[in-house]
Amino acid sequence: GSLHREYGIRTPEMDEVFIKRAMIEASAEVAALVSAEKLGTALPYLVAPIRALTHLISDASRETLAPYQEMGISTITAL
Image 1 (tube, one colour):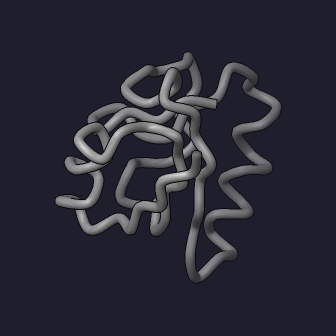
Image 2: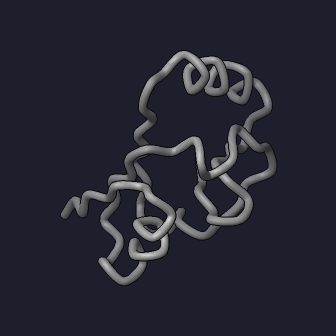
């Protein structure tokens, strides 16, 4: 998948959208494990807006993750 601040949580396959949406709707918290290369990108199909995300785990720099923190998303830097 991909994650974009404006375009949300996205996936390349339409079949995945409905499953992922159901999982998000049934969850109190939502975590995403996203590589630095996928941050700021937008694949074709929208799963959910970025505000659905609670936690973001990524190998991206702290500077790259800062805008997500400003949106109220907790971030964890994974090396």
